[in-house]
Image (cartoon, rainbow, N blue to C red; front, side, top):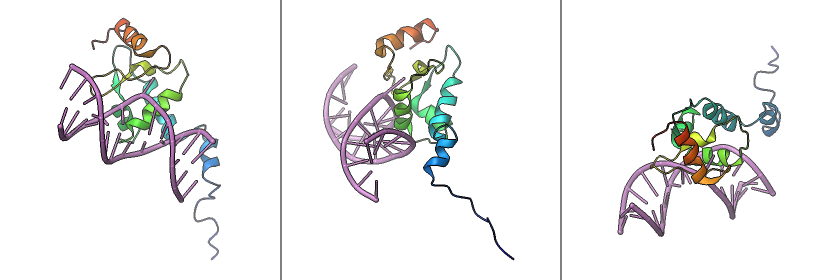
Length: 106
DNA sequence: CCTATGACCGAAC
DNA sequence: GGTTCGGCCATAG
């Protein structure tokens, strides 16, 4: 018999990813962060784990740094070692203020 | 493919 | 308490 399309159509990797709207990783990260309830925080590492890449905390930070969507509460993502991490919408100071206003005890 | 970058992590000092 | 260093990993060029 003719084995027609056994495998994937494979269409130049990168494009197929872009068609999906974004890279799986970035998209997943955004989804996770968007889901963090008010009043709680999650570390970069935790977000990475939830996204399926436990060791990609740094990459998560990268994703956050590039993100400017107000729909994503990136201020609720903090460091694992107690630090706040950065914030591209006003710096750590602003970040802490927002978290405090949400009832998060640092 | 290879290099550089970064809102990280954890251990070491 | 702090700083430094190596590892880690996705993205951009």
